[in-house]
Each structure stands twice: as C-alpha cells, then as structure tokens.
Image 1 (cartoon, rainbow, N blue to C red):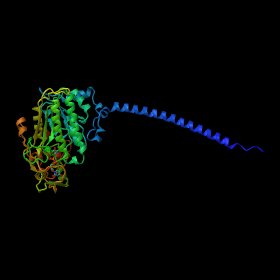
Image 2 (cartoon, rainbow, N blue to C red; image 1 turned 30 degrees about the vertical axis):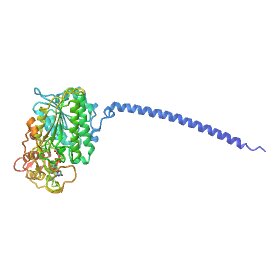
Image 3 (tube, rainbow, N blue to C red; image 1 turned 180 degrees about the horizontal axis):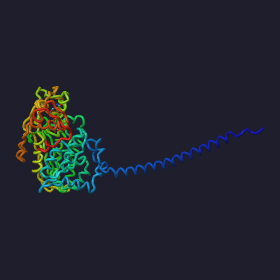
Image 4 (cartoon, helix red, strand yellow; image 1 turned 45 degrees about the horizontal axis):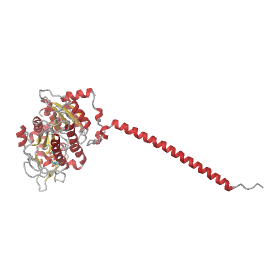
Length: 463
Ligand SMILES: O=C(O)[C@H]1O[C@H](OP(=O)(O)OP(=O)(O)OC[C@H]2O[C@@H](n3ccc(=O)[nH]c3=O)[C@H](O)[C@@H]2O)[C@H](O)[C@@H](O)[C@@H]1O
C-alpha cells in the first residue's frame, strides 16, 4: 500500500507559495501606484502652468467682477491689445479741440455715463468708455446706448473696473487727464437682495481704479466720481448740505458710497490724487435706468399693472429731489473742468491735492405721488395704486439738496422742473419702446405712437 501523502508538507509549501504571490502582488501594486502618483503629479503641474499662462489676473488675486455670470462671457484682459485695438482706443480718447480733455468714462453705457460721454465728445474732448454690461437691468438698453455712443465716435470697451491689468494697459496707451468714474452697483433696495455686488463694484472696483490711477498712471489723472444723496441717510437737517452728518447710512448701498468717500480721502492723502465726489439726487430722464421708480411706474401704468407707493410711518408720502439728467451732466462737466491736477506719480505724493465733494440736486423735493400724477397726465392713463407704509428697505423718507457749493465753484444751476423733465422722458420712452400711449402728451397734445428702438438722439443731444 502506498504511504499516504505527507499533507502537512504540501500545505506548508502551498502556504509559502501563496505568501510569495501576495508579497509580489503587493510590490507590483506599490510600484504601479507609484507610477500613477508621479503621472498625476506631472499632469497637475502641467495644468497649473497652463492655467497660469491663460488666467494671470485670477491667480494674481484679482476679484471676479460683481456679476460673475457675465464675466465668464466677457473677454479677459489678455485678449485686449494689438496695434489695431490701440489705434481705436487712441482715436476715441483723443480730443478734437485745443486744450481738450482725455477722459476715461467708466460706466459709459449707463444712464449718466452715456449722457456725459456725448456731452464731452460734442464739445471736442476725447472720450474712451468702459462698461461691464452686467445684467442688473436689461443689458440690451446698455447695448443701445453703446450703439448711440459708437455713432458719435465713442468706443466703449466691454470690461470690468476690477480688471486692473486692463486699466494699466489703458493708461499705458492713453495719457488720460481725467477719469469720470460712474461705474457702480446702483439701487437702494436691491442691496438687501445682492449685498456682495455692492462691495464688488462700489468698494473693490473703486479701489482697483484708484490703485491704478495712483501707482501706474503717468501722469496721474484727476478723478470725478459718483457718490450719492443716500449718504445723508438718517440726517434730518434740511436742505442737505455737504457739512451735514453722513455717518448714518440707511442702506448698504449708501454705506458703500460713504465708504467710497472715505477711500477717496485716503488716496488723496497718501498718493496726491485729485478727487471730486458728486452726490447725485435721484437722477432721471431719457435713456434712464429701468430699475428706478419713474421708469417702471411708466411701464406699469401703460400695461395696467398696479404700482406701490410708499408713505412714511406718520402717513406722509415720500419725497425726492428729482434731478434732470441735463442738469447733472452740466454739474459733471463743471466738476471735470475745475478739477485740480493730481500731484503724485509712481505711487508717490509730491504735494497736497484737491479733495472735493458736492451735492448735485434740484433744490426742490417733490412727493412721489405728484411724480405719478404727472406721469398719468403725460401718458393719458390713470395708475392703479397701492399705498403702503414704507417697509424697512433702506429707503429714506425725503431728500433735498443744498447746491450752493457746486454753484459757487463751477456755476451749477439746475433749471429743469419735474414736469418738463418727465415730458422729455415719456417722449423718449414711447419712441424707444414703440408703445402707443392712449392720450400721451409727450409730444404735445394728442396720442404719441412710438416708432420702436431706432429712436433718434434728439433728447440726448440736448445733454
Ligand atoms: O439719489 C440717490 O442717491 C439715489 O437715487 C435713486 O434712489 P431713489 O431715490 O430711491 O430712487 P427710486 O428707486 O427711483 O425711488 C424714488 C422714490 O420712489 C419711491 N418708491 C420706489 C419704488 C416703489 O415701488 N414705490 C415707491 O414709492 C421711493 O421710496 C423713492 O422715494 C437711485 O436709484 C440711486 O441709485 C441713487 O443713488
């Protein structure tokens, strides 16, 4: 009989073999994960390199623009440049009169920006516009304004003020004597819905512009920029004077404009930038902002939609010192013309520079209910009104400007009353949107049939 197999030896051998197999496969695994790790590392390095080459501003710590959905679509600063682009920029920015200004207008496709750009160009100054065309309100209106400017030889570059590389490039190409800085996140009540957009435009954007103007621009430009009547906040002394308190803002919008005034002080103090802040009081008129009450009330009245009118807690209707656009343009140009030169260069101050702030209002507050009555008369249609107590939304009950400083220093004299200004607005509105108002008085008596968006510039030419 054959002896039984030595089971213990066979099992040991098998165990040993299986041990060797396990050790080998672990080594193989370790070796392959090592290769995998190195390959991943190499890919990551290549990707970082590619990203650095394509998006230097992002890695350099620049903030994305307020409306990042838009900035993704807009060209990065690296796509600007080239001889043809520089030629276009210079052509637009070069004045056509002896001693004319070289003006960079930020927010040029905005309401006030468009009117000021046209007025400057009309008198022979050079104007280059900048606008980020964000979607806070209908961007197609901004594009129409851009087309209007283009027909008058003004180039508006599609870019954000937070794009410092682009700003540096612009100051390299053109020796701007002045900046009219109107790009901002506007609107008092919207600040509760999108607070960050106010910080991005009105604080970060302002700093971005001041930085480039102070440290890179040679010569440093004089800067005139848009502050707001809202900085008076809970101030109760009337009419509002530049000497009154502005440390109690009622909205984040107002707080960012007040912050802007403090930031202006710093850049003036450290770098010798000449800076003038203009506190606008509820500016209205043709080509206006659809987010403002007079504008969307018009739309609602025409379509039969109800409007909401705010009254104060003691039952009084709110009042505003509505200021017509042509008057504000006169104030902006007056501020530019009397702006002193900046005194620094390359980030160094050489002497004291001008620092100013002015009210640009109309000196005559009007109840919002009166504004609605004028619109009803002009449109030939009654508004459906809901009167409610003003919610806690950042609004203030009234505004009223004392403009004696602006009058003394650059002859600012508002001359347009609300009825006249709204008549010009309604005339523009029905033409631009092609609406037929029942018995509109925008063009004198009788109905006004709008022609649609190809509206002529008559109302703007008066700016
Ligand atoms: O003067 C200023 O500093 C500010 O003027 C306007 O702000 P605001 O005066 O609030 O202008 P609207 O939004 O057009 O409101 C005008 C008036 O209508 C009232 N209103 C507004 C909306 C509404 O639904 N109902 C209503 O009664 C407001 O309380 C306010 O008294 C602009 O929107 C701001 O960008 C600007 O900085």
